[in-house]
Amino acid sequence: MHQILSSFSNEKVKYVSSLKEKKNRDKNNQFYLEGYREIKKAILSQKIKFHSLFISYDCFLGTNEDSLIAELENNNVPIFEIPRKIFEKISYRDRPDGLIAICEVPDYEFKGDRLSGNFFAVIEGVEKPGNLGTILRTAEGAGLDGIFISDSRLDLFNPNVIRSSTGTLFTLPIYVISIENIFKIFKQNKIKSLAVTPESKNIYHKENLNDPIAFIFGSEQYGLTKYSKDNSDNSISIPMKGEADSLNLAMSAGIIFYETLRQRSI
Image (cartoon, rainbow, N blue to C red):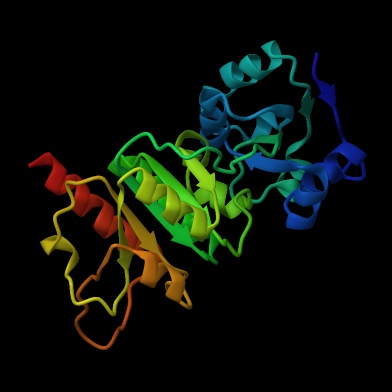
């Protein structure tokens, strides 16, 4: 039997909404997860512990919601029903689909010194949640073996990161690590590191990308740090025409990821 919550002033409802803010996610070590696709991927990943699920039948968009609800209910996750008008208030979306979960923040810190795979990327100092989420989605599509997040200026569990990643935040191997440690690990594992910077004279598609490799991307505003440029094995750039001096970070990552996939598919 689902518990019905009919007031926005209910403490459980207010708590859900509060997790849209980073300070409350940090304080409670829980995050806000909205959307059928995102929740489904979190379940499939088996990395995420669910604490509760809030639903609004009037907002459902498809026919698969009941099976997802039953799956969580069978794992003893409490289910709360709320009316559309309240759900729309606590939703992060313009068109909510009637599903919001509260989950425990997992530990994504990289531990150990061995890597599995040969295709990686490091995102250093990323500032925009939409860019990070799009990079994660693109990385999974291109078959990367892992993404390392270093010195991030944002929270991995920002609702915009989760939404723009379409839940690949949970299914792609993602690690938080210092930039100094990741270069040590790449050297230990014989992974070639390539700094992606407009200053480089080496055009990306002329580089042999078949060897074990890791691409190092910098922040949207400042680019790569001097440390990353100095410690990378080499550098590459994407040629630019016209007056623009750089591409969007997620666009740059997508170009390079799929060039790597293309070279490896020949």
